[in-house]
Image (cartoon, rainbow, N blue to C red; front, side, top):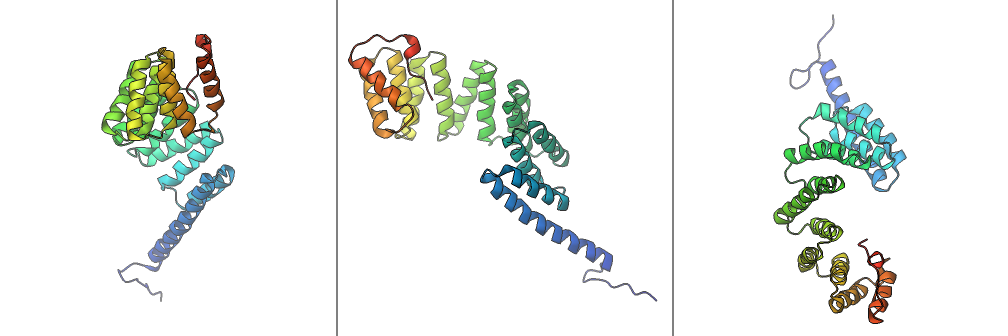
Length: 260
């Protein structure tokens, strides 16, 4: 005669075994995920992939495993595999904002900003506080030569997140490309009010003044840049430009400095 052994809550032995097995699997999966994340952050992408795949064998519905795995694939330029992994994650959690953001990054890497825009907008719709997704949306519009839209996105980020320096940098750099030097200098100046030592902004203002023919102001900011970042890769060009200005040598438009 067989007896039914029950747990504390009336669970059968079979149910208890399944629960314990699942709990043990989740615990092992978590350890593998932590190890995989550490390997990825140390740029050991191939090794991290093995751990992510082993973690998935134990826990199929953990979204963070899929995202970490996709990021490793992306770093190895296996973009198709990254997107395929993220699509699987999306089938599990269709309203997870992190997934379309990662997909958007994949399409950006593929040089398909028009496709990336769709995913980035979806990510922002699901999470309006995802600043990186908003910034990438601006970059995507910029790559599509939709400059007004890009500037609008950067400006919106600056207004809602005034301490987010990347938005200022991107907007100012785009204004320089559009030869709107006075506006660009204004954005760089706003950036310096937040971080007075932000060397790219200092250099940017110098370039803007230089482009506008305000050489005395340009010299002041070029010198300030060299004081703040003397070992910059731009330093030799800045020094050369200062010498040219001092010697009153004419310089063609093509010889002007460019933002790095």
